[in-house]
Image 1: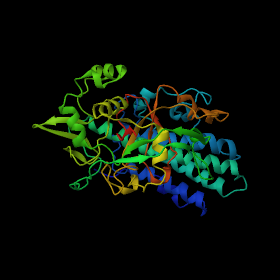
Image 2: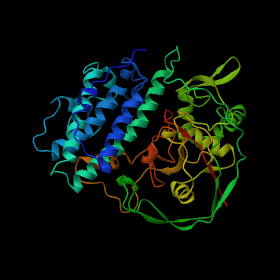
Image 3: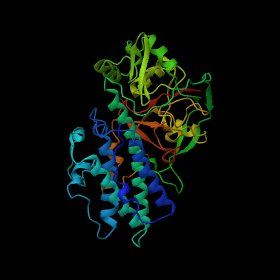
Image 4: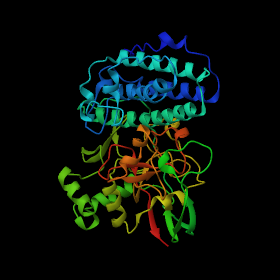
Amino acid sequence: MKPLERPSSEIADRLPEVSDALACFFRQVRSQTERLCEPLSVEDHLLQSMPQASPAKWHLAHTSWFFETFVLAEHLPGYRLFHPRWGFLFNSYYNSVGARVARQQRGLLSRPSVADVYRYRSHVDAALLQLLASEYRSPVVEQLVMLGLQHEQQHQELLLTDIKHGLSVNPLRPIYREQESVCPPAIAPLRWLDQPGGLVSIGHAGDGFAFDNESPQHTVFLRPYRIASRLVSCGEYREFMEAGGYEQPQWWLSDGWDTCRQHNWVAPLYWERHEGQWWHFTLTGFRPVVDNEPVTHVSFYEADAYARWAGARLCTEAEWEAACQSIPLGSFLEGDHLHPHFGCNGGLTGEAWQWTASPYIGYPGYRPPEGALGEYNGKFMCNQFVLRGGSCATPRSHYRPSYRNFFPPEARWQFTGIRLGIDA
């Protein structure tokens, strides 16, 4: 495949020299997004395989639109929009900002071209670094830039999972990136880790960045409980399947069973029978399912059904956070293996997002920020469940124990797995 020519190099030599930590982080995050797109052809950039996913080209442009709209247009005097109509194309869900292309139609945007989008990124990068080097830089600007960078890191993960889904529907089973397959070692038996419960502090506190939905920190009373020492493996989940887990409604929530029947689920997403063996699609190719890897791409409904079948339950997000404050970090995106595995910490963080039993709602005393950015998190606090722990597609610098991810209970295209809990 001929590498895509990215015109960002045309402007790279003219970027302002700003060497403080925020500017360096800005360069790092922006370049990481483009590196994730390097294996893609121009055609790959346009894939939108389902309404919940977005094309890579749209991710590249939307993250630039975020900086342009909320930082540059508001805080850099004289800034000129790269294109006056692109806000309509690349706004995601900010109703107070204006109208936008419907989410399910993002894949229809053949224009602007991919090359034009990379020119847009270069334009925004140069202006943003100019702002950081100017007298218009302020604590408010710095906070908005950090929010934009954390937002882009969220889209880095979405970009990978959306690409995976897009490539998976191609009967040629194209590979995102070649990677040598390594047979994982045997995994440790699952152990139950005793947790004393009691009064615990949950939520973000301190000077580091956190999204508004991670606050305010508050006190929660927990009964004593036990939490699994590692994630559920593919081999363990396969036992559930072979025992008729997808055929027996007693393990399922009513809505989950209806969803399972409606979509004819018989296995996690990307799994299929091939020559009498379970195989699955990964970013590094179509290969046999390995028992000694964490099971991923399961919905909340499947995770909950498995837990019931196993005589356990899903932990609440407060139980998860209280138990996982000090565990060692896993590989995350920087591990560069593009598929969850059991690392030195048993895959507790940085391998697969873990469904919790907690609905996604605001913490006691939570109030969304004023203005358009108040739409970032607060308006989604309905019909979603919280996930914790990060995945192999999550940047390590984006993770913290208080981080609250959230998805609808039927979602499966993210790297979502299972970690069990039981009452003490």
